[in-house]
Structures are given as C-alpha cells and as structure tokens.
Image (cartoon, rainbow, N blue to C red; front, side, top):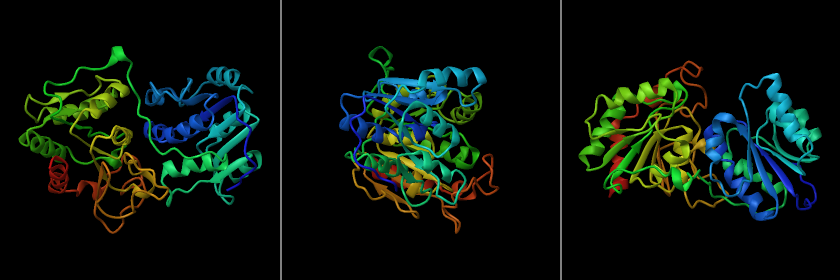
Length: 360
C-alpha cells in the first residue's frame, strides 16, 4: 500500500465505479467516508448507465455521471469533455484500464486499487499518488475499498447506503404489508442460480407460514420469463413484480418485508443494506470477498469466513456443500452459463430452517 502525507481537502471529487449493481452499492461506505471527511466537497460518481439506479437518492452524491458499458467513439468524446481536469481528486475503485484512464484524465491527484506488481496492469501504480493492491481472496470488497480512505488518512464509515425512491415514486405495498417475504430468484449469470423447484417449494413454505410472497426481478426478458415460470406454479396470492419496479422502489419494498431470500446477486446485497433479514444462497462465490455486508457491522475484520453456513447480524448465508466450495470460479464448466452442482444441491430443508430462525 502506497501512502503519502494527508491530502488538502479537495473541492471536487470523482468516484469511479464501473462494474455491476452490487459492486456499485459496495462503494457507498467509501463515498460516505469521503462525505464525512470533506463535507464541503462536491462528490460525483461515474457509473455504467445500467447501474446508476443503485445510487438514486443517495444524499452523499452531488451528480451521477453515466457511460454505456460498451461506449462508442462519440460516447468517449462526450465523457472526456465532461471529466477532463474537472476534479481535484479521482477515486478509482477497480483495477481495469478504462477506470484508470478516466481517473488520469479527470484529476491531478488519484487514489486507486491496483493489480499486484507482477500482474497485468501493475504498472499503473507509477501514475497513482495513493494506491492499494487488489486482494481477490482474503479481503471483503467493502474493506478493500475502505483502504482507499485509509490512504487519504480519513476515518472509515462502514454502512452501505441503499437507493431511495423520490416521495412521489414510493410504491404501494400489499395489504397487511408487515407480513410478506420477498424472493428474488434470478442472478445475472447461470452459475449463481439455485433451482426453480427449490424456489417453488420455499415460496409454498412461506405461504404456509402465513406470509404473502412477492417475487421480484429485473426488466430483462429472460429474467421476467424465469420468474414467471415460478409464479405459474404458485397460488394466486403470490405477487409477481418482475420488471415492474425500479431498483429504488424494490429497495423500499424489501425494507418493509419480514424476510428476503435470494442468490448471490446485487439485489441480495441491497436487501442486506435495508436491514431486512436476508437469507443468501451462495455456491462458487467466496463469501470472504463477496458475502452481503450485514447491517450495523462496523468491524474492520471480514464479516464472513470462507466455509460453512453462517449468520452475522441480519444476514444468514447458506453455502453449497462440496469439496471444491468455494472455488471462486464460474461454475462447474468455468463459464457464466454453467451450472454449479454445489448450489443445485442446497436442499429446501436447509433454507426452511433459516426461515424459521428469522420468523421465530
């Protein structure tokens, strides 16, 4: 970790977070740290267009700047004109080339996560005033990013900040809304999926326990279709919201639920940030690095260990069982559309036990 003397309070800060929804949410403790240390600063964030919703209503942010995940030459020109030397400090939360270039162009002072010296991109540290090496195995992502706060000699803030809908966008809740559970069954990649049979059985169990069930999902056609397949096998009492809410509206709905159940996906991270009890189903993913961040957890040690079913505050983590777990790979066939036997072998009975712990 490269550290220099404390930085003079910057007037304009750019935080660059060009990854998926969950990754963007996990930057919010770092952004809160910057806000508390530099209360007069303008803090802007640069994110992909399809992840900006995770920052909606965040009181720590002045402006959300977006770029397509696959920008055209015109997109590049437009973004550079927005960024070029407009900031005093650029905070780069990933090791990739594009975030590095944007940060280099945006500000004369840069703090970043960089690859290890012997890895591709290790040269970037030569152009960064403050840097810490990326640890993909033994440090939770929230704590990894808070090392950037350490480099700036500012106090850490550990709480995630979930998105908030505008007052006129708050969605209606089911009647007797204190007694419902949210199931979000669909992760972006197949290797993080549980089984449709499993989700159906858990939804039926929740209904028998006296909870109304809400199925949630994003707007992608394949996600809507997946959730619909579950919905068609359940009673009419189930509410299917797949594709019908914004991320901030879903955040609000989850925050009022008795329980949330989901796989390793950005919405599961979001659910944990709302303080609702969360049951998270994990397989190949290393929970040390990527487990949901529990509410009211402000320890500088990783909240979860690498192996086993665990509970920390509002997060109940269920891990698939196999000798290779967690392999931290993309499923059994090493591609994103692969199955993961460890996930598929999680029994509904294991999930039901944690449901009963929450409800009792």
